[in-house]
Image (tube, rainbow, N blue to C red; front, side, top):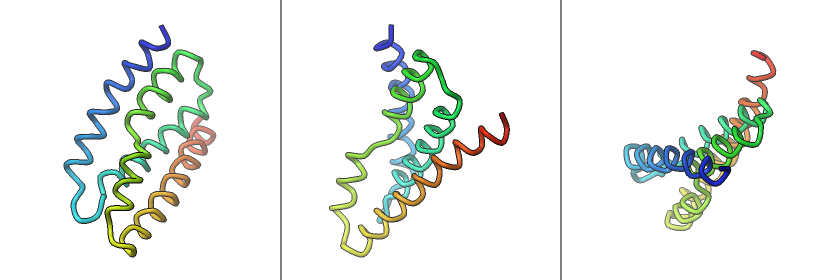
Length: 111
């Protein structure tokens, strides 16, 4: 059952990542930057909600795992000139960590 929940979440997350990436990526990988920051924010929300095993499999591992992408981030980083790559890496790290913390905090304020 857990593997099915992970697959179901991934079936939604992966196409959504692809669609956003294709729509926003250009000379600068804006799509993946947005996806990784948004996915990290959602991950923070889900973690703060203390989801049970089924909810975590569906939303954390499945959806967020397929929605965000470290491998695409890594490839896009090395394909860019040094200055652009540095800006991308720093922006992704800062925004993703900040979004995760904000998602966690949001649940604490609302909940």
